[in-house]
Length: 366
Ligand code: SF4
Image (cartoon, rainbow, N blue to C red; front, side):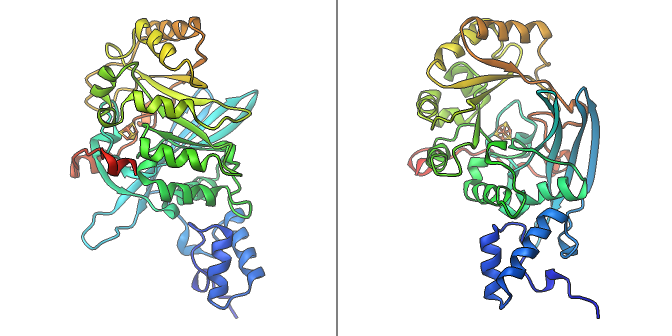
C-alpha cells in the first residue's frame, strides 16, 4: 500500500517553528514524536514528503564574479485575492570569501516591491505591491538550499522591500530560519538591513536584547552625510531624520563581535566628496559601526553613472584618516541586475506603479 504523503495530514512546516508545527499536528490527533521527525526531515532532507511545497524558480540567472557564480532566482508567490496578479520574489545567492573560506550568502526579499522610494534603487520603481508572509520568506531559503542545492551560511534581508515595514513576518521568518530542528542558521549569520525606520528599530532594539537574539546583525542604509542630501535620495528621512536615527544606533545593544553596518551607496555628484566622508566620520563617531561603501550600481534609466575607482578610494581614505572603520563592498552580479539596489522585476514595474508613501507621525512610531 502506498504511504500517504505527509502533506495530506500535517500542516505546512514552511512558516512554522518546530514547536508550532508539533502543537498544530498534535491538535490534528498526530503523535508528537512523529511530527517532530517530519519537521526535521522536511528542513534537513528536502520536500520528499511534501511534494506540493517544492518551490520551483520561474527564472534563474547566473553571472560570474571573482569569488564564484552569483545566482539570482525568481519564485512566484500565489495571489492572495481573486484578480490579484501573480507575483514573484527575487533572491540572490552570493559567493563570499572570508578568511580563506568560501561561503554563500542568501539575499532574501521581505516584500514584493518597496514603499520607501529611495531614488537610487531599482526596487523603488515598482512601489510596494505586497508584503511577504514568513513562509514566503523561508521558502526563498528552501529553494536555494533544496532546489538549487546551495549550502547557505548567511542570510541578509537586503533584497526587495524594507524588512521593518513587514516587522512581524520578518521576525517570525527568523525564528523559523534559526530553529535548531529546522534550517538551523546561526543568529549571528543573519542581517536585517533597513532604511532606518525609527518605529521598527525601537521594536528591533528590544528584540535584539532578548536571549538568543543578541548576535543578530543590523545594517542601516545611510547614504548621505546630512539631512539636506538624505532628504533628496531617501524620502523616509523627511519624517525620520538623522538626528532621531543616530541616537538609536548609539544605544544599540553591544555584542562581543560585530558592529552595526552603516551602508553608504556612493553616488557621484550626490554624496561622494571627501567633505562628505569627513562629515560621516564626525556624525557617526559615537556609533560602534563599520561604514560599508558601496559603489552605486546604475538602475535602469538612472540619472547617475557609477563612481570612478578614484572617487571610491578617495572616500575610503578620508574615512580611514578620520579613524572611521570602513570597508568597500565589491559589486557582484551587476550584469544580471542582482547587485545591491537592483532587484526589481521590470515586467511588474511597468505593469503596476504604486505611489510611494512613508508613514510619519505618531502612528508610524507606535
Ligand atoms: S533601497 Fe531598500 S528601502 Fe530603499 S527603496 Fe530600495 S528596497 Fe526599498
